Length: 266
Image (tube, rainbow, N blue to C red; front, top):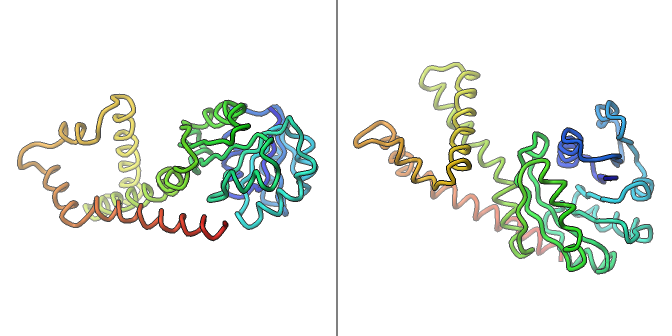
């Protein structure tokens, strides 16, 4: 596939790395106003760096946008005359609706919204997808791209804001929990790097148990806890301090913030 990524910031570079490390592109153009931070991509023979979005569009079939919402409309207006029937437009821009994209470039174009997370750079993203009516004919292409870098789920566009909170912002939420857990390890006497290594592997093990066993978290918790044991004592203290409630409230607050961002863009 001939892939072009417009907006090679943190997310754009993560997507590029994920595609390249999984051999997912025959050619790739990366566009950024200043390409100095992209020098590392020159090691890949199939990658071309450019500051010219039109050059990227002309040499790509799959266009992935990872720019700020305020820049996206300007870029779409810049390139719309150069879009052809071969192009698939994939947007990772938070809150920028399919309807708004259709109004800018036309509903006949293949439009897909994708919401990956930064774990895409290590092939472990949870990416949610939705498409316009035309884009439904090409959503399998987007799925094939992002399935190389983790897992995908096709959902209605009405759930994309919630998916952004759970899947994309969720990376930061889990990082904060892992950090707190490792700090607890330091409090118990471990060196910081040893505590973090233990916690990361334990978190990975917990997630793998759920994936492999297709089980519910409470079922796995029951296998660890014993009457009056240390695990149930710790869990009860965490809940008494509001662990689950704080997590849920944080998710709701994040959702309220993204809803406001979306509303402001209308």
